[in-house]
Length: 393
Ligand SMILES: Nc1nc2c(ncn2[C@@H]2O[C@H](COP(=O)(O)OP(=O)(O)O)[C@@H](O)[C@H]2O)c(=O)[nH]1
Ligand SMILES: [Mg+2]
Image 1 (cartoon, rainbow, N blue to C red):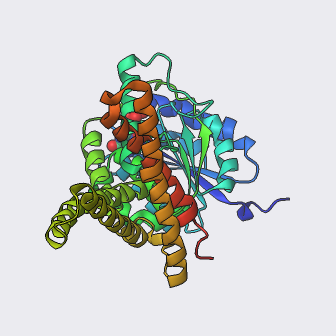
Image 2: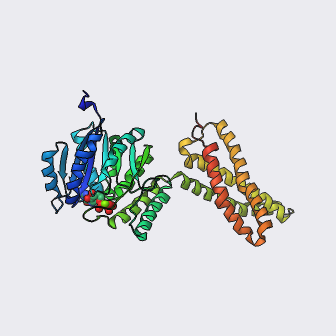
Image 3: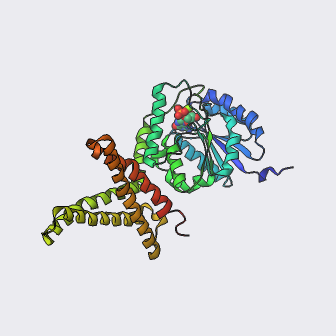
């Protein structure tokens, strides 16, 4: 006989607002069909209902007589995020040993038979998300073009702010979450801004920022069976405010890199003007061509030094070079990189491009070469060679 109490414990959290009809089918599905398939976990269900006027709680209370592992808490309606927050806190107070929370919409949009897979995958990470935008996942085919586009646009905007292109489904509500993740971020998740649907995005982002591992399973998302969606404009405003404040507080590495690069450009720009004037006064006999050649060489090197210093102190603060010999070696590499990606290759592209297309494209080719080649190449080389992850071994 397996000792039941030794098995890890997972609790399915169902936040509900007017989901009476849906719970009628969902709860028996969970207890009679899905849970018997899961052998190595203890499973429970907590319904967090906000005094739904349709009598959702009555359905739950009736079913509690049939299912001993079903529980209900009720509270004031403050939004989906707040309901999850209350539910997770309640569960941890009651049973600090809880291992995994499973968040799931109660409207039958989330296929309950995916639970065994979520529990299997949680062994590979700290949060498992049902992802609609990876291979095997999908949104309902009957969604109109506008709804599809809005969903795409929403995820694109979140990805852009956070500069994270691999999560792809930030808003998905079907998740298995190790309780330690919630414990680590619970104080921050208390904020009022996360009371609604912004909860989902913020939770995932905060977990990622702390280095927790996110694993995906494909999710085939279906339209709710009964009732109507509670998604409203609250969500857009709160999410935008959150994203803006987060990008200021924790700018993603790429944005730090871009800002440092822009500062470097300013150093070069104003440096050229400054040294050109200074050299003119000191060496009036110097030809204008040679004077500006020298002035820009000095200004460009200053901008390289500025880039190196600020990338080391800020962009790659977590991989900072601190030993002087290390700094020197990497600074030499940095200079070689800057020369290659910033001068040599763009000059070759401009030379070749204008020979092929004509002189009128000269400035355009420069801009394109910098955006399409210099920026990504520098970012790649800095990440992989100059501030590589194991540099401080
Ligand atoms: N307790 C509680 N549950 C909510 C609240 N808002 C939404 N929900 C539940 O969250 C789940 C997802 O909501 P839904 O309206 O289907 O959102 P959509 O699928 O994004 O359109 C459903 O189970 C809702 O009943 C709320 O304010 N309080
Ligand atoms: Mg729904």
